[in-house]
Length: 308
Ligand code: GRG
Image 1 (cartoon, helix red, strand yellow):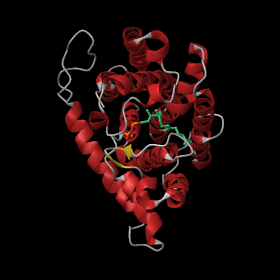
Image 2 (cartoon, helix red, strand yellow; image 1 turned 120 degrees about the vertical axis):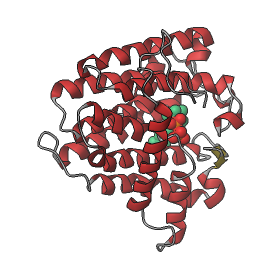
Image 3 (tube, protein in one colour; image 1 turned 90 degrees about the vertical axis):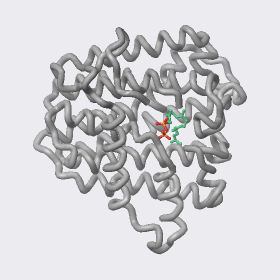
Image 4 (tube, helix red, strand yellow; image 1 turned 30 degrees about the vertical axis):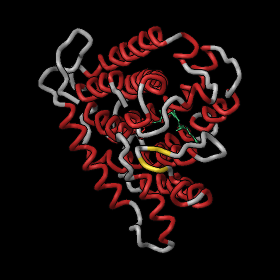
């Protein structure tokens, strides 16, 4: 990945080095997650090994990066956003472990490694997912709480994004849509919940950790919603254009499972256009930050152009 350049489609200034930002923030997030989680040898060791196996399997850490960048856009301190960035990554990892189970997407590879149930067995994989979901709330409880956003508000934010009206609703609709012809509108419903809700929650939590104003939170919501939708369109494109080695998970699964995706419904070219349009909307939402949201802009652009 190279530093952002000033091509017409590129919004972040040349001086911003996204690669350094991602490398340094990933290292900080990994160190914090390591502190927050029980050590691998803590009894019962199997579950702590299984939780750590998937958490440290090499995810891109996009949700924590978005959370920290959103805090910076609102003049917040990254150290205060860190528990929330880690909480979101725990929820994301839990959802991946459960999604890979034979009862759901039935995948053998994730993040370039064997899936959790392939290594630890299905029972422990279910429990590792459950434990990471619960761990997220324990970690979030360690945030300091802010005048506009006390702990209750923070918990509500996370619970709603991960709950049966958002993340789980998206997964239910995804499961029920397999092998069926669904409309672009129904597909949008799935993407809003399965993908966009947690990405949106990540930036909102970053803003909350900076005690952001209602106007700032509204802008972050708008940004997160559109980046989240673009993220899933790109994910669907990568599923049909990249190899399993490049993705670190089984490529071509959507076609095989007869899943509705943007490439399947509108074709690859139109799908790319849609992802660009969604990213442009995300950029537009950042206007209120008057140049202080450069890392968020760079992340949105990176997510649009990513190849894995
Ligand atoms: C099981 C409740 C439950 C939900 C599962 C995560 C999920 C919902 C399904 C997995 C498949 C999928 C396409 C999810 C949409 C979100 C997404 C694209 C996840 C992958 O996120 P990345 O690319 O993964 O950020 P890494 O591994 O880099 O963290």
